[in-house]
Length: 282
Ligand code: PAF
Picture 1 (cartoon, protein in one colour):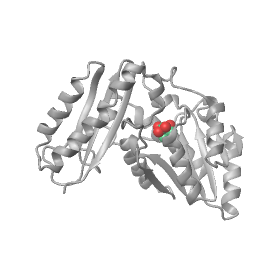
Picture 2 (cartoon, helix red, strand yellow; picture 1 turned 45 degrees about the horizontal axis):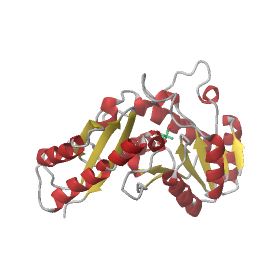
Picture 3 (cartoon, rainbow, N blue to C red; picture 1 turned 90 degrees about the vertical axis):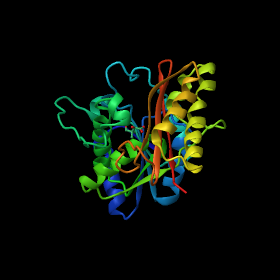
Picture 4 (cartoon, protein in one colour; picture 1 turned 135 degrees about the vertical axis):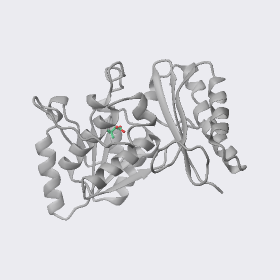
């Protein structure tokens, strides 16, 4: 496995692999790798000749007062894990290499970025789509892999790729969970033992929403109230949002008539966790 930090070097390397007829799978990450990332890497390994993993904590997707400085970083540990997943190239650039002096261009997907995390993290998705567009240009992958835990991100990236005619497939894979259902996240390591225990309420409450839909409840407000009550019963949890929305447009729903995305963001102390469940109507 090779580690490359220079954008032009990764670009040249990937270009020559492409010319040789090799297919390239890209797994974009911010490091602090966990089993969720590894499952993306393993799928990329199975479906492509070459697997590239990017590790870059992207400052421009963090708002003021967010956790950019305290975001977990462990490049050596990440590289070791990537190697076990059969990754060929790790691209780990510096901030200056990605955003050199004079950088002025941003990629902004409208509407889909306004609700859910976009409402509480203004500018977040602009930062995500800007760096992902740059990674797509540098690596020119045939496939790029994202986790369903960041559902809104996957919808936004798909839209960007279609709108900018990016010639690749976006592959979205299921959320990997701990044994109590908590979605794997790099931020989980920052939870205290009590917060960690409390955080299992997220998946339990999403399952409650699904169970209500399955028994025929169609009133979104009634379900949301129940989910909120469950989360609020947990003294360490502070709700940022809980929504039932259309899985494609991400617009909140009043009545459930087709597939629905239950999505939430909840804070435990300083740590903000997100999760979601795609619910199909029987
Ligand atoms: O999902 C993430 O880890 C990040 O948002 C991504 C896609 C690597 C862009 O920085």
